[in-house]
Amino acid sequence: MPIDESAEHKLKPVKVFGIGFHKTGTKSLARALERLGYRVTGPNFTLESRLGPDLLDRCLAITSDYDAFQDNPWAVLYKEMDRHFPGSKFILTVRDPQDWLRSATAYFGTKSNGMRRYIYGRGNPCHNAGRYLRRYLQHYEEVMRYFARRPDDLLVFDLIKHPEWKPLCEFLGCDVPDAPFPSANKGRYHKAARALGPIPLNRAAFQRVWYTVSFRWLT
Image (cartoon, rainbow, N blue to C red):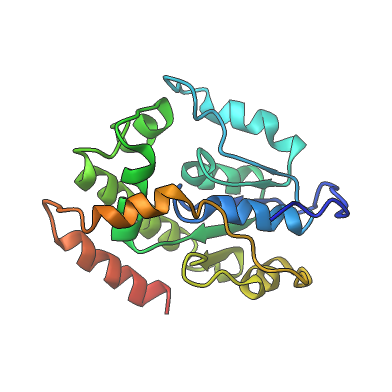
């Protein structure tokens, strides 16, 4: 969906951080935020072969130019962003773990980059499915625990299953646009992901952990 060119792209007083991992609808979230008039950036610094301890400083250096941030590396810097920008809003996009793993495997394949090594310790999900899923689940548990006493600051958003404006707009205090919710990346990678079928894992308990988290936080 094209960006609403009539929107006034003025810096918002409250910053918004999309802190869901890649392949959880991050591009759709970016388009939705743009449609609501936010200046959006992300992912950032993903093409670099190696990331160092200056990553936070580099991220902070560009925050004055935007009012919404999503995908990597913002997902793993949410605590730092919260400290630097009190009063910000955080959106945790979620997805069924097997669907996420299939999508990530189909999309990234055997290609590696510094950002994924920084997050998972391995540059691609092939032959690293257990490591990737463990980090994925760990991230969501940590985020939800961090915001447990601040429900007004966090939106848990499954826009894969429920791509709707209402929860997002209510959370941000925006009017609901007279347009369909944007949907990105529904192309050949989705077909490839479906073709993979279930990905075998060394620890089937990961799935049970996810459903425990889902029952506690998403219902």
